[in-house]
Every structure is written in C-alpha cells, then in structure tokens.
Image (tube, rainbow, N blue to C red; front, side):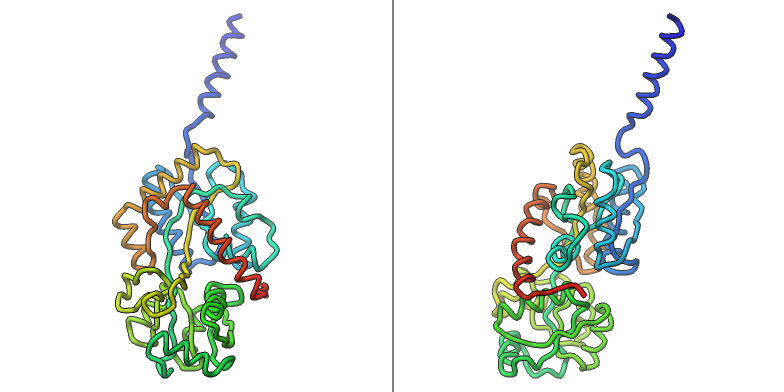
Length: 321
C-alpha cells in the first residue's frame, strides 16, 4: 500500500510538471519571405516587441519560396500549440489563393490572432512624364491606350494587382512589365525606361521625398504621415481606390483559444510600445486602431479583403508564373 501511494504521488507530480503555463519555451514566427525584405523587417520588429509580454524569445524563421506559399504551408502543418506563428500578409493570405492552387486553405487552416500594420501604395511616374496630377495622368493614359508601361515586382504581386485594379477603376489600358522584385523595377523607373509604378510606401517614400519621381496619389483614405504633401486618391479625383498592403499574425487551426488570447494580448501590448511604433513608422507602416487588433476583427477584415480582391484577380485572369 505504501508503494502504491508513493507511485500515485510520483505520477501526480509528473502531471503537475508537464502542465506548464503557456508559453514555456521559445516561439517561432515564420516569415514566408527571404531575410531583408519588408515582411522580414516587420516580423523582427514584432518578435522583439512580443518577447517581453510573452516572457519568451520569439525566433524568426524565414521560409521563402513560391510567393510566400511555402512558409504559410509550413505553419498550416505545424502543431496547433501556439509555438509556431505565421506573419501573413495581403499577398500570402488573399492574393495567392486567387492566383494559384495552394496546398492549404488561407481561411480554414488558420486561427486569426491580430492585425499588425499596413502601408498604402503610391501612384508614381517617371519625372519626364507630362501630367502633373492624377486627373491629367488618367487623361494621358486614355489618350494613348495600351502604350504606357507599368513596372511590377512580379505577376500576381501587390503592384501588379493594384495596377489591374487601377485599370478597372479608371477605364485605362497599359502594359505590365514584370521584374524580379521592386528594386530593379524602381531603378528602371528612375532611369526613365518605364512610365509608371503603383508601389509600396516603404520603397516609394524615399524616392517621393527626394523628388526623384512624380507622385500623383496615395492609395488610402488619409494622407501618409511619411509623405503628407501627396494627396489621397479621394482628394486627387479617384475616390474609393484604396489599396493597402497589410500584415497580420495567424496560428494553425485548432490552437486553443486561451493560447490565441495570450498571443493577441502580446501583439496588442507590442503595438502600444513607443519603440515598436516608431520602428514600424520608420519603414512606412501604419498601425491598425486598437479596436481592429482583435482576432474577431482580423477574421472579418480577412473575409472582406477576399470578397474584394478575388473577383478582381479572377476577372483579370491573373495566373501564377
């Protein structure tokens, strides 16, 4: 009997030891792009900001390839225990599913944690282009349909989809010229080899500030804090042409709600940190309002983005390379 009681006590002790509060070890945040890009930068800022609230290191794992699909699929297959996060985005969780056949479902295979930040795009053109504002630019495009060129960072990317949306909204036609990334595309725009771009604020802002390009509008409802002199599309004569490239955090489907809540609280706390806010602002990001930082708000926002963008992509018959 004494031996039986001792055995029961030992087993109870083992059970208490294994039932450790979450998190009890480092957490991995998968960034589905290579190191050095804007997603990687945002991921590292958030990892630093969440470390204190969680009491654990948040490790960045860059899993690039297939326009972000490899990294997202890696998280979809991970254990639903809160130790593997996805820093997802507009391209990875909205655009890609309309362009490619994916091994995962961007809605059904994930639990939303919270929205992080977003950046608008700038409608810009080479310095020598005659139009001086957006209305003149649209009229110039209509005067010579199919002849102007827009650089993109690749088929199905943010700049390409924004360009398709611009054509639909304005009734214009121009040629898309895909590049292997935004850097080479910008170089050709600066050199005057390309007429226009609809580019992410993070990469366009330095050129806009330097006066190296003509900036016609920012694709948001309010002006960019990084370039406040540039009008919004609503002010410039193209109301409703709103395009935001955003980032959010997800975990695998089936992750316990208590764990999701803990991760959301850490995300919200990180986004209130003045140092985190400044670092995000320095790379052109605008933090979502507090009421939009909940899992429920991300679920609704994600659904609205899919409803908006999938028909546009499918109507334009955009296919992966």
